[in-house]
Length: 388
Image (cartoon, rainbow, N blue to C red; front, side, top):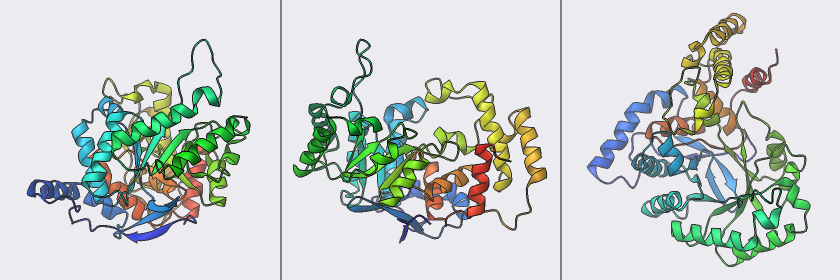
């Protein structure tokens, strides 16, 4: 169990969230429970979820990732469904949501928190993205990409959109190399001033270059309460950052813990996605690699993922995996998605996309499950590292 893990009671699966007072809302949540109860029971849901410290507060180890209405629409999920899933996630005790920088997504998140009267227990992690580089001036530095007036403008815009008194967690897109520049003290001073003015409670860093040699040092900044990195079983480049964060008990937000849904087990050659889905850029070779990885993982879970039979290389990999697999007394996980999510939950705050209602309870159940056995985690890593 990670050093910051705690266990706290969660809602009974058969109970509607506190906000669901109408018969229609109650019927909706019971329909959700009936649909996903088997997945929850597969992992032994004990009505308790792990939590982590994040700055001055405690949050669930499972959060809602990439709350972005535009991305959801591209994947065929209407805004109304995202809204329902958000309300139900709050009702089930999910207390951290990574919100995109656009006003519509921020407005939706703020409305949900206010409707649930959850300002004191839900952290909305808003973002301050980098200004775009100009074609005629590439390689601009901190002052140009993240100017101090721009940071203040973004913070105040997020406050207006969410209608919160203060932003619980404002995340800056930071490059590790900027830490040693002359503009860095000015950035730190601006962030301290916004905290002093009561506009921001805590600051986080979004690190998109976790493999940079200076990335682990960035987590030593005492004014940061969290760092956000892409992290999953098939992309562990951020492991040095996670290790450094553990040394000072800094919260780590793991984005894309299911690799954009590819670790759910349904992706393989021939998969059909909505025309505007952001994952349509996955080429045939990438889809084949995903399918082969799913096949190699299939012996570690109860239910074989569909991708394991989506192409000839995957079928061959599945056959080898079954032939070489050691005898197991018990299977810890029902499916690959649970396996991948629990791997991340053992190391960070996992932020899968919870934009569909059917994704919610399996995620909560994974957050309630115990840590994976060390030998199982090592076996997973060997599969993705290409080790024998």
